[in-house]
Image (cartoon, rainbow, N blue to C red; front, side, top):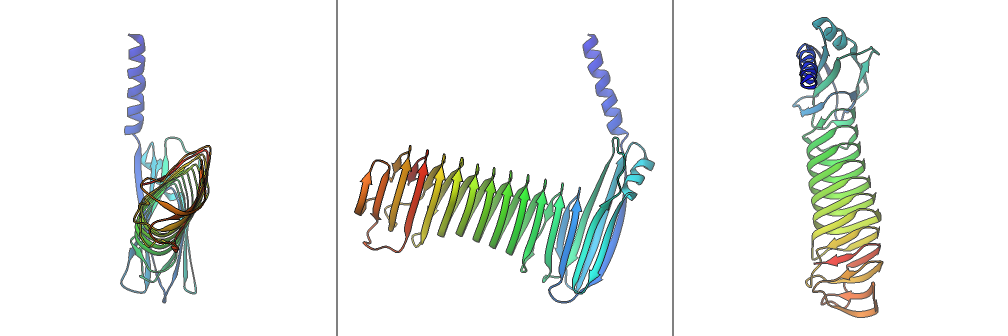
Length: 323
């Protein structure tokens, strides 16, 4: 009974402390006139960044700073301990969030950007402990993100460095990405070059995909042209469908399984090797075979005697499956 009363007392105290937490908000609004193809740089943490397409040659910032504390005065103090440094040089606008060091007990600070910018803007974004929300960009985009998620609709060219977060986008024509401990989800991609560790990749459709990875699971709905996976270690690769006119699949893997949607309708030159693993080629028939033994097949698959496409896979401690 005493133990129950003690737990109830602690719960009530925690509830009262949480309920007593006050919030103070203040807003910064800033506007800059820019020319064609302006560069927008933002360095932020503890908050979100959202960029909206504007209709004029202006970059407008609407920044909400929130402070939380035990009292309204403490909340106001924490909110006012945050500032934003702006600079406008030539055709580049920079906004950098600055935090005064404060002893903080049961308090918090957050900074949220809403930026309206021309369609031709070139964004350079850095954020920690917060998300980034984007719509459509025709210009190159550069993002460095830690402990946050990136949401985008359609990007032309993007360079992304993400750790401990998620990337969710509908379309990207050209993507270079370095990721760690993250989840990557893309509906439609042109060319993707990835350096990955401890991730999950889910891509519905991609034309050209290059990845160097360890401890990552890669799943692709449809591969249209080419895939290269180097040093695929302690993960897995699955491609549900491969276009009939694909050009190349090359995989170097260990402690990983490789599953490809290749059927008797495909034609390709094959060099398949496994060490401590099996090869399951499904309904495929091979001819012009120069090497065929346990764990190895070198030959041609499909109806053509001299196909343009090639599949080269080497796996140690894992299997190769076609179906």
